[in-house]
Length: 299
Ligand SMILES: [Zn+2]
Image (cartoon, rainbow, N blue to C red; front, side):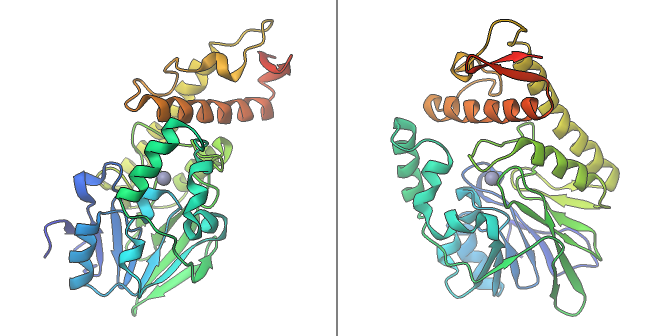
């Protein structure tokens, strides 16, 4: 067996964890191979070429449109591509990626475009869109259910194999860094998606950027940890607001309210502001804050 492939459960030899290059750290991500269905293609072109030589990949399910999950699409030209309708456009037209990160016409955007070119990302034609609760029958007995878990992107989906209880959760990735920094991200949906996942009996959670989490209690605990990180961000952001003096989004620029440190300053400072804005959207909906003089005050 290829050294980056791992059987997750002995009884299920056609469900394989496929480890991404650099252990799935960005710009790579992990995949799951279920029969002839591959979920996401960001493992690296090197891994993907080796994988597709040994295993037929007739179908590709994309969890969402982010570049680190679709970068290998062009290497699987004979496969059928599926995603959720809400994530279809930036996959079919990668020119949309920069504006979705809010970095169009910035230095960060220029650097980012170079990176996209370097990883060979190309437009992908989507053959079919799946939707919440669709069940994909694979082979004689595998049933892969689509779990619609938006928030990270508008059409972000996970997949749950109903017999083995193995799930692929994409970038609901149970790391220390819940991410909702594209313009189609939504923090309230992100948190509802965490709650939705807690209600599913998941025995093994495969995610984009860390090792699989094994055991349903561990999966639930990791989902709670993931949510608690968002709550800490809520508190940090709110501690900058007062009942009298309005705070504007730009006043919070570069304060490390979400990123502990900025690795690529320009890009991450922009991402942080996009994420803080998602918290403001939530606080407004929950009546925790109000708008005053184009800024925000505590209610
Ligand atoms: Zn992502």
